Image (tube, rainbow, N blue to C red):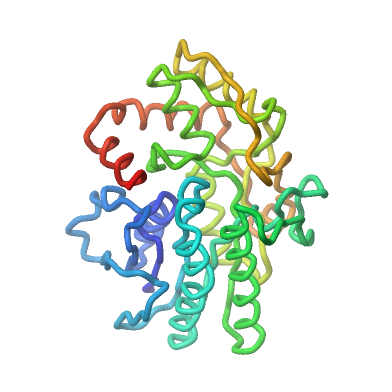
Length: 323
């Protein structure tokens, strides 16, 4: 079995490459490295079953050979990235998805779309179930990401209905763990890096807004199960345990033994007040449930970031982001 994975050098993409290789697949990865990091795949150098191509899926794409599956993970998924690169975000969600679907159609391959809980926007239904249509501002600053993913889901379903492509759509909720970019603006990386460097921990709003955090190993297991035995309709994959941002900040301070103070800043525009997945479908169809508690997952993530603090690799990532 041979699969193509776009966004292969990203946080989730690189972990998914590892999982497919471990399951015996041959993998071709695509990444233009706008946010992906080749270091995430450096351990696969010399692996005969893996090939990494530097390419932008939003441009004309031809990859030789036959594929049994195409998994589209390419996206600028963190707030800092998609706010800095709104056009690229919209392109990869629209043109990039169309190109990836074209490869799947040409190969009669299964197509897997990595979508997001952001399609629910600032939800009025809690927890969020797959049948909920969402509450999204289509012209707000976050719309480049939200709407690109909503379009990606729509065009995936269109290809399924018109061309009978075998499709999967995962709606990913907040995921964290090793290989995240230290300066990507996501709340877990923000808090950990601030705590480890002794900076004030920035809490937006009053800290009462909630998120549900899924450790990367659990997320990848859910994604792989969905790819192999899910149906064509969207499926939530995330941890249903809900935490406030204040609880997360306090836990990071405790686990890092940091002296950082917690400071508050105004809440960003269109920031969701609640986010919690209903995973009834994943439990029923996939036999999947997250097993790694937030405390343990944070400990592993902190252990990953601790040696990076002050390293040339971390500084180069920060410079790349600013540039």
